[in-house]
Image (cartoon, rainbow, N blue to C red; front, side, top):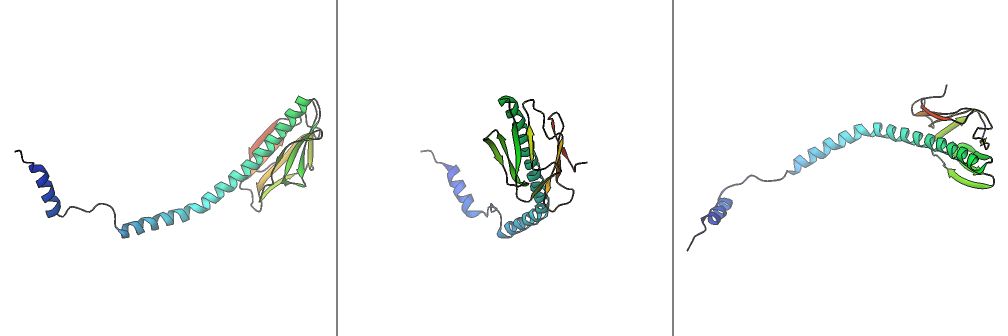
Length: 167
């Protein structure tokens, strides 16, 4: 009868020798978690500034797309479309064509939207703004010039979005 010497040797080797332990110790785990906590603490302020910038860009993008929607609806319906603030531009805005409310945006918490052009815009059936050129500045409330986006609407209805304060 054949004898399996391999399995006997394997069993003896496992029982007799002190094989190195696998895994990690509790001390290694604590040190690793401590290093990760320190790195996360250092990254948090930078991440918060990134989030603030994203919120400003999102509000600016919404305002630019609202104007584009207003313009296209005015041309499509061969009539007048309006973009009006909900009290203030920071509280949001609504696009209407005639008596129909097409889309509402906002409100935007901690976002400041400022313009010298009043609380509403309108576009005629030719796609040109009836109010002439407009400039909007979108920024985080309470912050200086960081995270600022300028939206410029020229007399022909072209929308340009530029990073930085309006000039």
